[in-house]
Image (cartoon, rainbow over all chains, first blue to last red):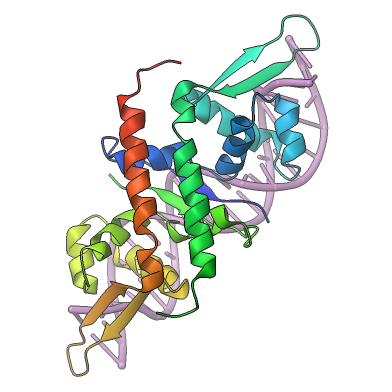
Length: 115
Length: 115
DNA sequence: CAGGATCCTAAAAGATACTG
DNA sequence: CAGTATCTTTTAGGATCCTG
């Protein structure tokens, strides 16, 4: 069940392809990013949209995206705390990639079985 | 050392994004594909180009690509056997995606640290 | 040359329970 | 609400040796 994983080890770091892959690395990463392209989301919003994704993995994904400067997080003061995750301008750069993933997937699905 | 992994579990299968991600899934997958976009390659050619990639993983990657209909393999008769892996027309559909990965990576590298 | 077969390790991912 | 802490399971990846 579930979703894709794109995992990092230690890449060439300098290779642009590696950098882009890092951004969409990890199971559910593209789905989390898609949700965020629709606007700011709280932790619970994201969980609600991805029901089978555990809090732990969501946290890992968000931490990774924040660490890469693709997503920012703001917390409301007071209690209970509310969070708001949103894409940074850097994160917005991923849109064309997500769109291309979609288009390529469609093309692959259209293509007939063999050569 | 190394390269990216984009790993499958069982995706929604119908989602185009998942289909596209599957195509570039697994460590070294994009590098193998890049080599193949330059023309047919034998098993050893591919190994030579990716020195730190083990035969086992290369086999896994190629098997996966063949299973998805993205790559075909022909073997020379006689001995020793020679192989020739090449992209199918379906596999050629990945080019725009690989290019977009590159462009997005470049853009991310250009972007200044914060928002 | 082109792999297959094994075994082993290292990471991800998942389940569950708990906290500020 | 928004996570953290643990523990267990799963899976990918790597090393080594062997075969058609």
